[in-house]
Length: 90
Image 1 (cartoon, rainbow, N blue to C red):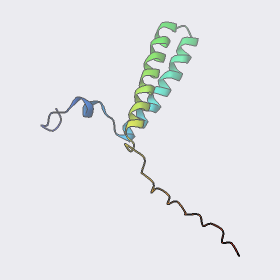
Image 2 (cartoon, helix red, strand yellow):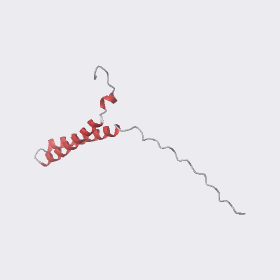
Image 3 (spheres, rainbow, N blue to C red):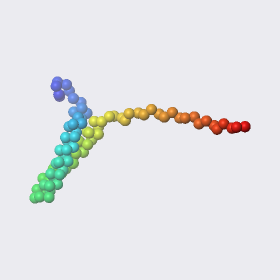
Image 4 (cartoon, rainbow, N blue to C red):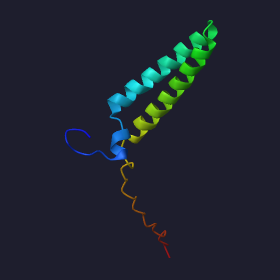
């Protein structure tokens, strides 16, 4: 509950575009740190950090994509031109 109002599941899990960008950055950074940890002696911890970073990146990417417009704006359909038949000189 936020500010005395119950939250639906969808609104509780959705992120603003700014938060989604931060989650994308944090997930990518965690993935790189996990790779560096797996190169060193902490392979188990590095693997867990990599998985967490990839999951965070995927969630941020999903949230960022869902934060945009629902549908692209519709273009007006082009009006078809009526072709004139060539006039005969006869």
